[in-house]
Image (cartoon, helix red, strand yellow):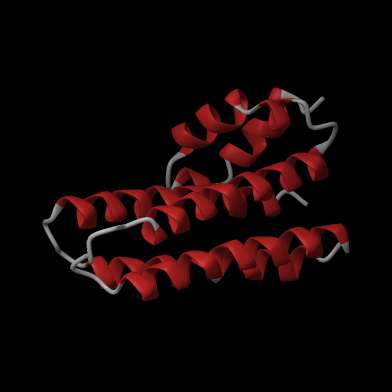
Length: 152
């Protein structure tokens, strides 16, 4: 099983620490696949899968908007789908022992969150505020994945 030391190692990474260390610790210690990971590489894989799931949820939120939002819905949806694909690629690269390329794929996901933030901007409607909040937390999740990939 992944030790608390392994989870702490990810969450104490300077990149995570500059984002949201508390979210990292709360998420990984409460996530059964993370707690039951057998080693650091498996913990990294589980973390990447978790973040990919978070991106899918956000893409689903955007796709499910019934009323036309004040931002470019298609661009925001495509940005989240790009994050999902970046994490799919990163997961495959971890399997191929290519942590450097996996790290790149994870890092470029921040470019996609920037697109969403630029689209939503300073809109004050409820949907825009919700998506901005979700995107800022998504950045924290991406940072957790960065901290994870830095461990291998």
